[in-house]
Length: 148
Image (cartoon, rainbow, N blue to C red; front, side, top):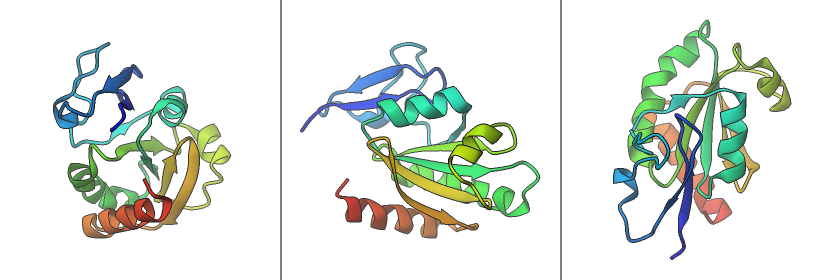
């Protein structure tokens, strides 16, 4: 099995996680934060681009806005899904109101929208609020389709 590269959601440091080490216990070598905390971080444009460019694991992005009722109602389900999908998948959040250029680049037409990236490319997208179970099943189905 090969090494995994995980980008810290706090500082953007790229961390190598050896296959024989438990990924859930791994900490960032730069800032000391746990790499997987079961809580998706809300990140900005630079860290978003770094996650996609440097992570060797799939990255699931929840595009949301603070005024969006369905986004707010899905937030606890998305967080709960992180507890099930990490460390196989990095879950992050992108506030479309705070990062309109990134939302535009992603061609976001409605929120909430979840986009799954692997090897820096979008592999799947779905819009609308979902439950924890729906999120987990959708991601696992997509991962099996792409062979991740």
